[in-house]
Length: 387
Image (tube, rainbow, N blue to C red; front, side):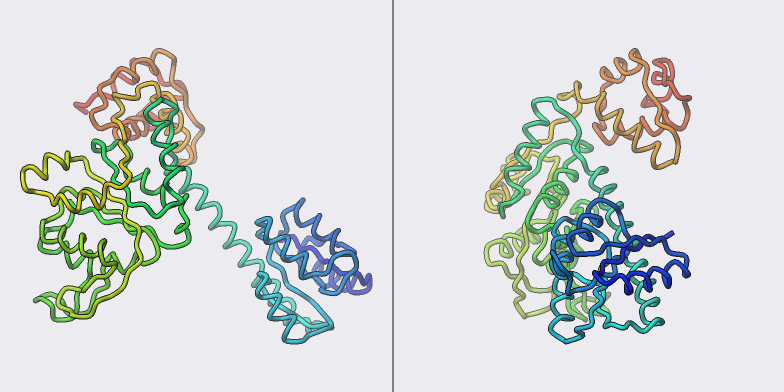
């Protein structure tokens, strides 16, 4: 049942709105002035607040502003006898869902309330999904090496510095990139990911910079590249060590001039993109062998972040395993399981050549195949690399 708060200093208005809304099946509370309304909105979760503007102690626009500053997801519908354009515009600027004049038209009021409830539900769903995504991208561990990684992320994320993330496959380089973006000033703009190793060399330039119609045989329409898609946001170039030299040259130009040109085009397009690159290769060795441009390396490597393999942070394995147990249980709608002390000790001493990614896969396998307490024999059986 949707919960609605009526904030109005006139008792007759509060009583009338309560009668209408309760008849429609809503749960209704009342507040007799702005301050009381704000206190109630902050103390309890309401789907919608019908809020008067002219009230004692605190007017409705201030209630709205302070509620939004506190991150309240309640949708405010401002209700006022002073139905002028200035009030409506100001209410919208402060985050109101809608503005209705007194006396309200009954049909308009009910339609607005229903729409506001839908919006409130959507906001709550999005908020929950964002929390879940952040949880999935959380970097877990308190070993010295991973603590250094997290401290570096916190320091560099609010800056515009380019970052080169290195480390073996499965160690969590992508999570580092996502954490940097989520803690940066570009959070509200897109994070666009490109796996340079997964794109054929003849298509990488089109993927990154886009192409014009007719630029090559299969270019039947214009394509917007990843650089343009990430404008004002972050571009994550994963496995950049696998990028062709010709594409490297164009990426270097884009970093130097903040401009790109689509394949087959002549127009220069300005871009504002923060670059995070990642690789499992030794780029200095690749430079010596002529496979990677040294000037691009220095452009990318403003802030280096090394993500260690699991073998270098074994003390983090219990924390990671417990997190994955919870994540998998939530994903499958099951109760979390636990490892016996012997099982956990055995887990800590496995080779983990696939690093954190392999650990997560093994934990998921154990959750599926084992009962509530996972024994050392079950770990030996199901964590074997030969399965």
